[in-house]
Length: 93
Image 1 (tube, one colour):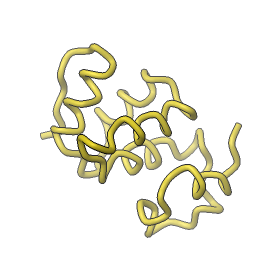
Image 2 (tube, rainbow, N blue to C red):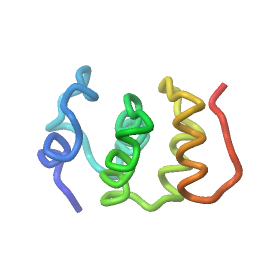
Image 3 (tube, one colour):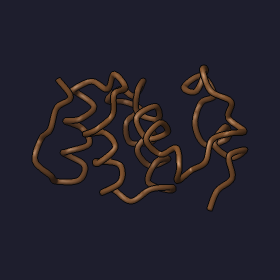
């Protein structure tokens, strides 16, 4: 399992501006890490951003967390994830 210190080397620190990175646990905090990792993604950065997540989580975990998150994930991000995993489109709002 990756340590909390490695999160800062995998994802931009700015995505976790409001939390102490040294206190994040890859498994216990996946409900925060997964949506934040895709929060600022765009069509041009999506592949890189999702691949970072896929190094840590199964696609079922990624989809589950995105469907249930309270973070402001755009429907466009949901569409890109659904297309990547060949699943039915889902939206946040």
